[in-house]
Image (cartoon, rainbow, N blue to C red; front, side, top):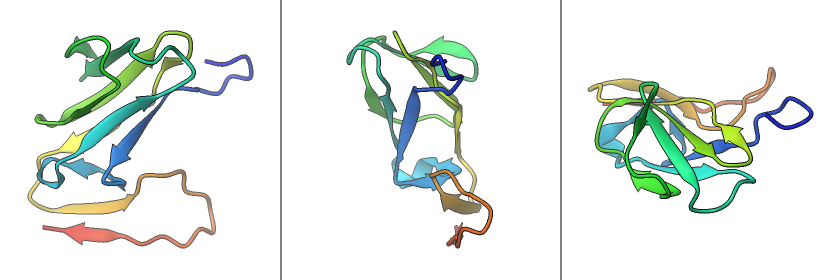
Length: 105
């Protein structure tokens, strides 16, 4: 957490829809104020993958987080292997925003 209490590490999701689905060939990128290449990934709460890579293409469903030394742990990103998904844009939504929903099969 930063001094103001805001998480500064984020995960960029491509394509930019949530929940992400495996059949979309999802790429996760860890972004933060910490040192590039000093990233630790977590899957379902457990340390996962190789330390150091800032991005990867997801091959397994689960909940993912990343940790950048110096900027902390990111919020979780869920990747599903469902046949049907109702998706919203992978950005912060505020009350009153116009939102496009995707129903995908």
